Length: 226
Image (cartoon, rainbow, N blue to C red; front, side):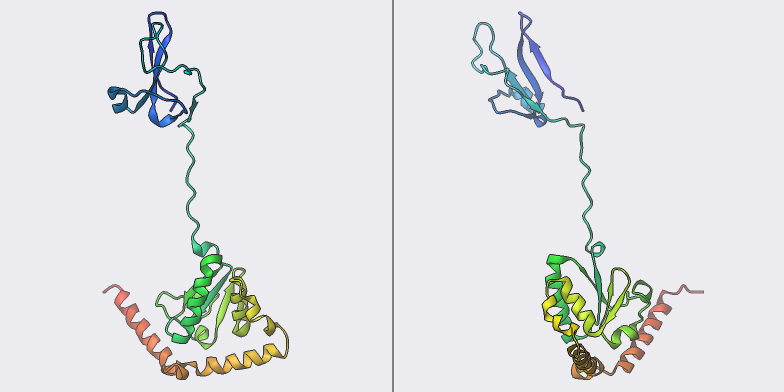
């Protein structure tokens, strides 16, 4: 929309005042907005009449006025979703109380980095197709992480990669070296095997069976009646 104004011309052909839309003017000098002009959203800039009878005159009327060209509009950029920035996925068991403590810590750190995508494998929405073919049973066996290039890492290496992405790489850095890495994996393997009993949950076989039954009931509920 081009700059529009209302100009009043005096008897001598000179410009007595200029009224322009309020929203498109930036000025450093005083102005007089009459009631009618203000209601119309205008700013009126007055120039002295020849007789000098206008008290609201501007001796510096010829100062430069910067107008904003309202034709130029900048399209707002859509916000970048957190999932679009991830560098690694963490597949975790959302029903494991001890696991959640570590997950929550990483989520808090991830608020600054936005590099980890957290995927709860216990959710009914979990699908292997979106996670490199890792089914629920496999993902429950031990920690799995998926890098953005599709590489799957497990056990202590998965923890090391995850911690590196949130500025805590030093925690697991020593596990890069043998025999420390092998010892760390052995300790974690023992925990992964018995974590259900340690946390007071049923054995994995019972959990798998209960999930299969639950998913079967869900599928029957979703299937159309014939």
